[in-house]
Image 1 (cartoon, one colour):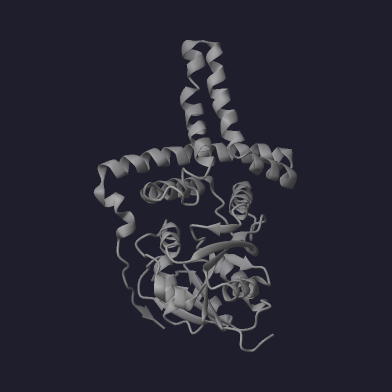
Image 2 (cartoon, rainbow, N blue to C red):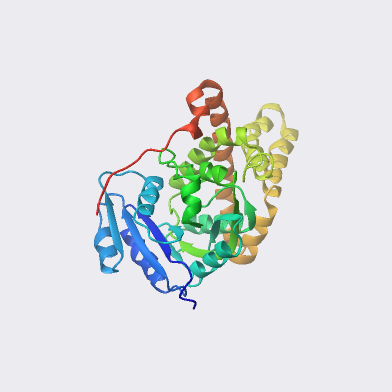
Length: 342
């Protein structure tokens, strides 16, 4: 290995993830790239996270108050010495050659401002069928976008420190949608590249209520940005999945028609349901090959609920845009600073 290759500062924001933090740090210790410093920014955890981080010999920064992951990432940059910044969530364990791939990509092409990765189809800790659903769904959606993208995947992304200084910090006011806003800023000047060799196992949410809540809030909060930039990843101009969500919602809304107007009207909800499935047919085929028919049926049922939730969120976000000028200006909120103790 060339000793002149850049130092990589891996910044790990953490809040009450003692369960996975050790696995995350152990994976970093196994990286094939040797020039790494690790900075854990603990966001006032109430579990054993800080003790675990200290046992691994990494630098630990503790916030004065709970400030959220975007602000914690910004905070870590202030302590970083590396020419490359790698942001990694504490519930994710990287494959052994990920940092090396990220450095290779960033040093080979100065037009690339950020490189992002994907999730392994297997979760870091398998707790439930819902978690397995989320693991397969996210793996398929993210890895299928390999190449140039317009958002960042904030759980694992890397960038040159000079690019961070030029683009500016993540917006700490956007705890659920900082990735979309930051991707929008980066792509005004640089490319964002998703490479499937940058991969790790993630400890996904294992309760359906939490999964649906996150889908709802993230979809709703993305609406002001989609209105500004329809070509954004996942936006209405470049994805059939939005139509699939609408079809699922209208399948629910038309379900009473057979009882009200006669059995011939059963064709409406059935056609809408099939249309919703067809909008992401490749995903269902992938799950069928990977996990078999019984789990695919379960997966389809959960994803139907997800689609309905997203469609409701879109209408809620659109209504909020009409009624609230503040919501329309969501992505104009200036960044705020935060204090620390070391």
